[in-house]
Image (cartoon, rainbow, N blue to C red; front, top):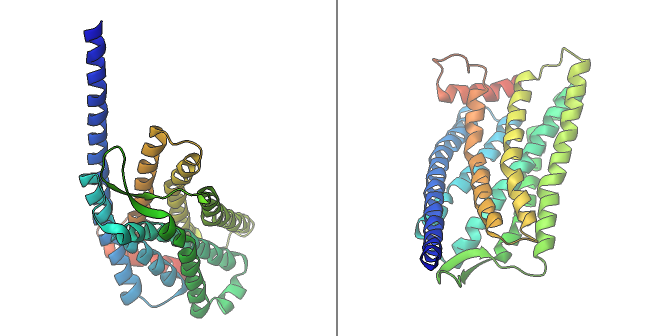
Length: 306
């Protein structure tokens, strides 16, 4: 009995160790894939929207979205190396900056999607007013405000992130330094950076759907599909993260920690998907001879011609 019991004690840590190794390898492969696809796809979008196409309201929004995603993808090698070494080796400054860049990406993405949704809503509900008042200057101001707001919200990551010595592994870890204001920060970030934008986007969708149903002549099918795909992808990828961060306020178990790791990877995945959504939802998607670059450019043209 004692031998059996002892065997069980020895097997359990071995199983957990193997499980964690498999999880680490999987995370590394996922992050490497996101990095490669994200850098390639977002660089392509920046090149097309920034240098090959005429500056329009749509191209400015999607260019900003690609810059935000590329900024985050450039920080992924630090995360990959940390997973492999199972410790943080890049110092306090990079600990704060990588976290800041991740939250900047998430916040700026949702705020830019709000701008895109409001712009599409105005063009569908008030087409004449929209054509007369939808100027590059105004959209650039809106995009600038989105970046400023994202920066202000993300500054909290510079405050709460710290490099500490892990008591279990006795190695340096880059993590959150919990304080009395941690709950308030998490909840406010969830409300301002997720709930309110989703409510605004939902209202815009409601107006668009009602307008389309009452006016069959409204031309918004292709732009509406692109916008829907972008927003749905963001919502699906970011919701689990917010669920686990809110859950982590009260519970600190292993399930929550593993859930946070998986949800962060899911959020990261969103940063590489947008360029491929542009490509696959362009008007030449069914033409097998069309190139990846032309698909992205056609997606932007579809948006502008609507």
